[in-house]
Length: 306
Ligand code: CP
Ligand code: NVA
Image (cartoon, rainbow, N blue to C red; front, top):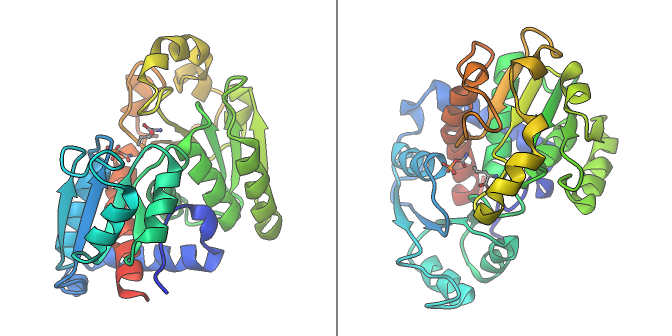
């Protein structure tokens, strides 16, 4: 049976570990894997803009010997020009895998159900699994470990936050999420993450106090205050989130060697200052690079069924 990657909550801890091991080999030894997906094709169906996800999947697929096709809303206007089911069934006849970047997560589920090839969620309003996996791979690379590590996520309880919650809970990393009132991650997500955490020993804290969150953190993470699709809320969110900026004052409460992460794109001067983003603590571009290594591992596993 084909496998999809729609959310980290669907992966076992062992599968995550195996993705990380393969990612590390791919990063170390590019040449060895240069033909592993030869003759295979990947479609990228994107309903939202992208830099990292598009470029890292396209280049990653090329480096594995395969090819990719980018399909913008101008070509595949899901649900308008054609139903999602018909898109999935048709594209499955041409390619070996599909990356979908979309709004409603239900589109990922519907496409996965109708398609005959693996579907990879390249970001939905609910989750961003490739990001979460690359982030934990990066933390492991920098700190050697995930157990006994605490990540403080400060900002909006959004898709990236959900994926980090699941990733932490599945790998035994501790996570503290600090959001303004009313912007915490959904109760169902927290409940599911807590259930996974029980098995791995991960500690999950949800708070509205960013200072408390960063105090014992090894890693501080943020994302934009208004995600794609929330553009009309930008002005209001700038007011609501103003005390949740990652700046020197907040980081004065964290360990001096704390790592700073951001999935990017960053809105400098909003959720993160230039000073922090350009400091020696920031690993945001290592994180961006690792998207490609981790996604290559995901592609090999899903497209080859290994
Ligand atoms: N982090 C991330 O997914 O970036 P893009 O939106 O540029 O793909
Ligand atoms: N939360 C952001 C992440 C972008 C990579 C968004 O969905 O726009």
